[in-house]
Length: 341
Image (tube, rainbow, N blue to C red):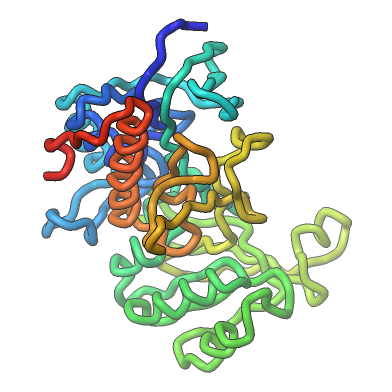
């Protein structure tokens, strides 16, 4: 284990982590960014980003990430491959055990490890993710003006995605493996009552057709009258299979926050694993967690918005909160002016 103690380690190199890195580096905190298993996060799966402030002509997801990394490096942030496997957060300095078999120590930690969208295992989903297959209607719905699209799922998120997509798509078909929804009654009723939304019950997505050049052109659906057709097929039951022409597929089967390394620590999370952040004495939000010196930013603490722009905002909050905590550790209230610009 190295004897060095970092001022700040940022876990995650998506938009939230990069925003925190820019702010922290400008404050001369020399942040170390652990890039994780998927450097850049989910935004790297998005081909075009049209709703990020400052890019009126849009920007590629990978390009936006690369620009952010270069900006952070310009101010002195350092990047290292690896993820946190375990964390000991009870005492100062905090100790982080990495996937590279290293243990590093830090006074503050920003958790910006994001949340991974669940996939359904359909054929060709790896190839077509970002090319007509998406996990975010708010991000990519506008690319499907005039298309017929599928939404896969049956919860509130699926209903929200379907309703949003009606602004652009000609038709929205919700594909659900059962004949009843997990969604709340009010959300289910809104979707059922919409003229442009239809439901395909007891159905699952088996394959997506198309190519990165053409985008999504169709899909194969499987159906069984008792639901869960894939399981029924594996058990030897006959199922119905059909191919439909569509221009887009949206997965809405939930997200899993990447917070397993916080198991056994005092960082409080909800039942799904999302990190709770705290309010200050006036009731206003902060990036602080329930463990002193640990802060959270981006999708790892946000099951609702999950947007690049909100992740960037909470990333800057986490860096500023970490700076304030470090000032407290050093016994001074003297501000660092460069971080407030």
